[in-house]
Length: 290
Length: 327
Image 1 (cartoon, rainbow over the protein chains, first blue to last red):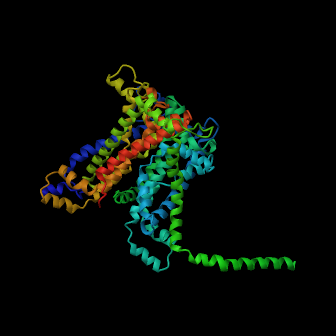
Image 2 (spheres, helix red, strand yellow):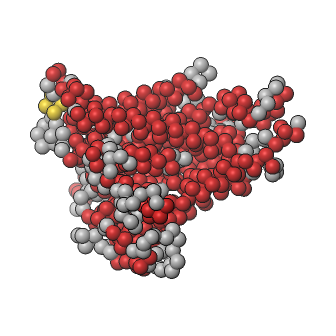
Image 3 (tube, each protein chain N blue to C red):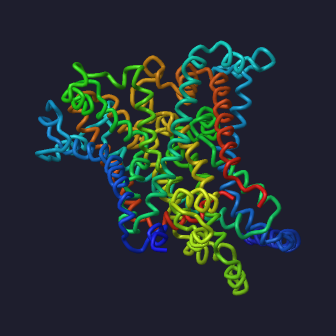
């Protein structure tokens, strides 16, 4: 029986049989982080170290020069970097809030309401999990143009609000909420709006946090909308700017700025995920496709 | 003055009457519960239709036409199948590079990334929760970088001159005498793309499988040991995987979608579309090439349809393996 206790899933205590997993996992984990660490260290390198041969992995005299230069740069058309940055923040916040609201409402209806097309709708959404947006970039562009969204902030937001994965996860999570709770609320006179905002919303916070993270990771990093839907330089996003910056500036000096920009892009990702890691894992427990 | 006020009063009365006789009864007849269901669903369904369903349908429609954006689309030759026939018989780039590249890339990074995710998730489940949390974060980090940043990182690491870190190491160790132009050479680009994609493949599917493994009922294992299971390998195949099939399926679908979605990485690394000697050219890039560079939208749409079919085919396999249709 002793050997059994050692082979437990999710062990509470340390056992020497776990050592072999650490021997594999720790190097793999470090290996995964190495490229990220390299960019971090690159971002803090002064020019002299960026030009250094042979290149060193870690920075020896860290400076903020690259960041200072990044914030002073402006695109070829004279739009300052901060403009792109605030565009991105606005777009990201708006997208996340709207996505959460829409997904929550739909998830509630698909999980707790009774109507004919319920099963069909859910299975259509489940099929859409396989949807690869880049495959139909052109028809999507045609839709955006027909709706007259081109060249507006809406073009960064509206095409990305329907998120099949998000709806799928939220619906699965709402399924765990007991029906009696909703019945009781209805007897007390609550309507759907109350139920969604006061009962379901707070109960499925982990799932909503996960949707927020997924939506954030997509919208903060995407360059598609800036590349295709928006022509006006002052309405483009930070991800787009960074992409042009890194493509245009060759050589070590450019590398420093690119690394700094990359870091500025990455930090919000990391912070949000770390803060919400527990919520994400909670949601994932209900993520199975049955 | 009086006349005007009277008129307004008369109009008010008319509206009131209309409300009482027509609108109010009609409103009372409306099933409030149904109405609210419709309102809850409407935003998502509208957006879903506009940006997911319609684009797929339009792609299917356009694939049977010749469309150059400036003129109206015209029905393609050969009964509409001209584009498909051209792609499958005449498009040398597609047949010689794009299709083999895509299949090679998808088969290695899809199932490969998936197996890697499962293996890592399973190993993580065997250790205590605090170190697990940090290691899971480390493994997940690459997947949240996004295409742009991933491009920046690996363009610096694999840079083709002496300042590139990998080149510097190779020069130092004496593997090579002159720096290799990794990203501009047809020999290396594909391997680097596969490496980078595998590196960033531990995303949401990985988290789902980790949660799935951790949630397997512990009594199942105890019972299995009494029934004669001897080691961890048997444990995985007889208990873990069968009891987390739904998560395995979710993970598989995410791996497939991830593999096809990450197709832009070749262009991000080499900085050009088409990629050098078409070495990293995938269907996604071929679509962009025809759609946004040559403006042959009908042809690009036909390519899109083929890509969607390919994804569907891969997913079918996943559903075969892990789906629970009969439950």
